[in-house]
Amino acid sequence: MRAPKVKSVSLFSAKVKWLSLFAFLVAGGAARADNPYREAARNLLERKCGDCHRADSPRAQEKALAVFTLNEPDWSRRMTATQLKDALDRIAGGDASKDEVAAFTAFVKAEKARRAAAR
Ligand code: HEC
Image 1 (spheres, rainbow, N blue to C red):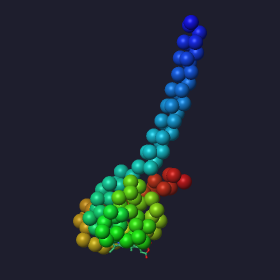
Image 2 (cartoon, helix red, strand yellow):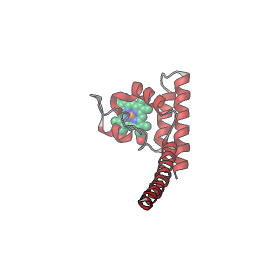
Image 3 (cartoon, rainbow, N blue to C red):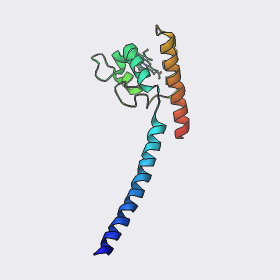
Image 4 (tube, rainbow, N blue to C red):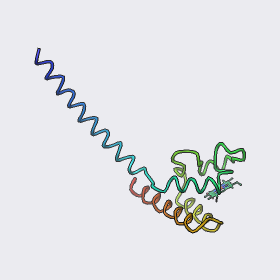
């Protein structure tokens, strides 16, 4: 009666090994996918640009949502480098505070680094 027990224990530890490898890979992917300024940038754009760039806004525009949709988790996913720069120029040229411009600059910089690392 002992042998099956030992077998099931080693099967269990093999499963644990695979699970921890899987968890490691998932965690690595999540770390790469993370932009620490994402929520700050989202909050700022929701106030300034949410009228047309939020799917649940009554004034949402199809073409605007195709560029970025603020209420998607990874909302800047479809934006090109040029569109990110364009958005930064619009924020910097608008009525945003110095701190808001700095936060959005940091977001765009981190987004570029994240994309370079994902390649
Ligand atoms: C009144 C509606 C409206 C508001 C407000 C708005 N946008 Fe847009 N935006 C659009 C539309 C519509 C498009 C798509 C234009 C097209 O495809 O011709 C667009 C496209 C864009 C693009 C892509 C441009 C390109 O040529 O690729 C960027 C970047 C952008 N918007 C940034 C912003 C930012 C940043 C704000 C807030 C500061 C903002 N938008 C506010 C309607 C809006």
